[in-house]
Image (tube, rainbow, N blue to C red):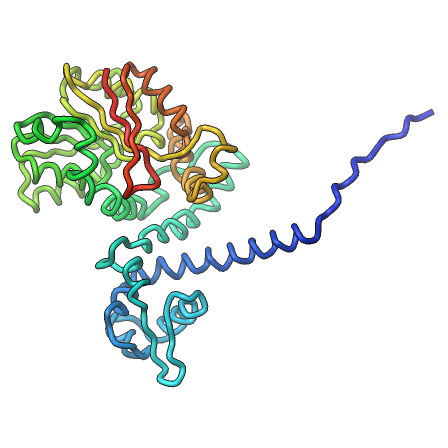
Length: 365
């Protein structure tokens, strides 16, 4: 006699909960598409062309921005439907409210349109990422054609305006030491704009930038030369073995700006930073604010975005190098454990009012 096999019963559906979730998904779909159009508005200069101007017709706006009228008209449709641009139907003119312009233009208080660029940028590697889901491995840096450009715009708002006034002063007496002249390394420097700013402000100090990308270090060298900065150098360098190859006691200050979590071997990088610090040196790290536990990130205001950026870039570029795949949301708990394993005995975590996305760690041996 064959024993009866019980079939799991489906959980009963709460119609109100289902309806609320449907509404949420439809809202998310609309907002995601609006971010694609926001990215285009930023990159094309359409927001800047509308800002501060009298109401414009489609033809006037297209002419001012140097773009094709038919595309501008359709873009305006998305902007009006999304409540970003206002329309006067009788005059057939469009305007960007000053309150919106302050958050969407290059002359505004904080250009949030910069971050909209992550949506199409990450979407461009969706097929590559699906292959990784099925087969493992990762998506290499070279598949992200504009990532360093977007990151430079991102850090241009989060890091550069606050670097001298808020970030460096987290280390007591650091400004005075930089003015007197010390040796500084930025590991994972990207386009090196933070180093250039420091090199201009502190001409007696010497600055070095390391990054995996030949393209971005080449860009940084050319830009530093254009600016006439003789006290800053850039080198394309794989930091996955930095624990063994870092120059010993060579730097008085080492910085990383959102660079540790996407390294192939983050702990080796941190051990190399410890090795590279001279006596009395300090390591200043900016990295993503989050927890090492999913359930503690449920109320994070940018949690879905940061996990998406992590999955579709930070984690996968590390795995593409045969690395750890730590990811952007490694969290403060893991970060502090890694700092301790790397040989840092004193670690302070700071938060800055202007930056809701990052912690600022001051680490000493």
